[in-house]
Structures are given as structure tokens and as C-alpha cells.
Image (cartoon, rainbow, N blue to C red; front, side, top):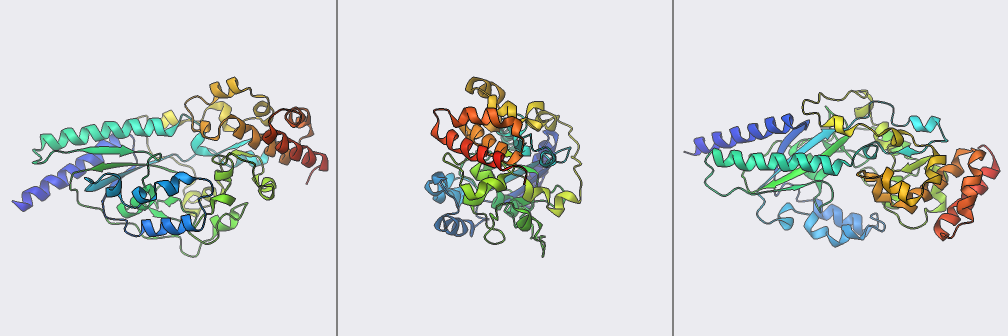
Length: 368
């Protein structure tokens, strides 16, 4: 009797993995609801050290983050899914073109939250239907999460065996590298967990040494107050002046720690097959591959709203993107941008005016 139940569970798990692949996910594995017992302790230390900066929501939801069952008490298994979004060109090519703004790879296309969540909902519905067809004795329920809920996706993905959290804190897969979107399905199904992945970083320090702002106080710990992904996206105040020169031409996020990771560079930028056409929907929009700083500095709020429609770029807000573009303009050495920068220096927005004045001073200093 028990063997029959185990066989049914194994077939259901295999069916879930096959359906996930058909929907466009590159990897699908399972862990148990109690698989990350140390996550809460590590998060507490991260918060105590102030590494979350102004992201108060992390502290407010800390208890729910530490254990899937604290978020949903009925959770028995967690299905973790990953989709590779490796760029098809050098993501740091903008560094050779200081007159252009650098956009993090994940934000150059339609908002991945919308696409991934839709696919997760489809898979979750299929799981429930399949469990019923196989004669599950208990009611089956599911909940889906993509990044915005208080779920610790990376520790759960590590526990499920998708990869390990590297020294840059991103999840790294031996097969797919670290360009991975993660999604989670919490379920009341009791599925056998997969083996967790072990750390394969070894003695490598490439990500730590390449960080332009020294945002890693130690391996496996990131200090958001110094991370360009935080200062250019989440921070609503002035970018700390000591970090501005190191920002270079970046106007939304930073990919350096991933770009230099050997688990990415060894594999080039080859993407897995895309049978469901999911990845095709994540092709970069032409205007966001390498946007001209002049264009960004001239954007009105209405034009920004139209250009960023259904993209993750909305996260930085209009004035945040302008603030970032002003810093990038100051670092560009391109004096043809002076008139556009000066317009903001003489404007009514104090935040933008302060960054514009800094940029003008940098431009007047000449090439560095």
C-alpha cells in the first residue's frame, strides 16, 4: 500500500517536472517546507548589521520570510523553478560607450514578474488537476510566488538543488550559471524532496574583487548601502557622493558580479532551448539595450511612463532614473551633455539639481 502511494507521488513529481519544462522553465526541483532552518538566523544578522539599508519591508516581514509555513501554515512541499535569462550579447558592452546608460539585463525587456507568474499559475492549476486525476485522498492546494512576496527564494532553491548561493549571494547553477529567474509553488502535496546543492565557489573571488563599490563586507554577505543595484533602484534619496564615480554609466542596477562569475563566463552566453516561446518574450526592447544618456535626460514623466510600461524599470521611479542618468552623465566625460545637465541643475527638484551640479563639476574637470 505504501509502495503504491510512493509510486503515485513519484509519477506526479515527474509529471510536474515535465509540465514545467513544456511551459519554458529550465529546471524544476522540490524541497520540503522545513528545509531552511538557518535562514531566519542569517536574515536576522543581516538586518541587525543594517545591510538592508532603507528596505524596511525586509524587517517588517522577517518572521514570514524565515519559514514557508509562517507564510502559509499548510505548506508541506515547495516546488522551485528556474528560468535562464542569459544575455545573448556582452551585458557590460555599455562600459565601452560612456554616452549610453547601463541597464541590468533582467530589466531590458517586459517585466519578468508578469511572464513568470502567469506560467506558474498555469503550472499550479495543472498540478491540482493532475493530483485529482490520480486520485489524491486529500484536497490539494497551491500558492505561487515570484520575487515580490516574503519568500526566501534563493535558500529554498539551494535546498531544492537548483544551485547554491555564491559569494555574491546570487544563486548559481552548474548547468545554467547565475542568470536565473526563480519562482516558487507552495503546495499541500507531500512530494519527496530533491538533494540540496553544495557550494562550488571554492577559492574564487572574482565577484568580490570586481565589485566597483566594495559592497561585500565578506563572502556571502552583501551590504545594500554600497550596492549599485540598491542605490540605483531602491534608494529614493541622494546617492552617497563617495559611490557616484564608481557608478560609472549605470542607470538601473549592476551586473558586474554575475558577468565575471566563471560559472557564467565558462558557458558563454548560450541560452537553453525555448520550446514554449517563453524566453522569446524576454527579448530586450531596443530602447533599453543601451539607452543614450541624452535621451534619458530629456525624458518627460509622460514619456518615461510610456517607455517603461510593463517593465521592471518602473521600480526606480521617474526621478530616480533621472537622478541616475545625471550621475552617469557626470561620469561620461561627454561635454555635449552639459546643456541637458544644466537644465536639471536649474530646475525645481532639489534632489535632481544637487546631482546635476555634481555632474557639471565632473564634466568640467575633463577626462579622467
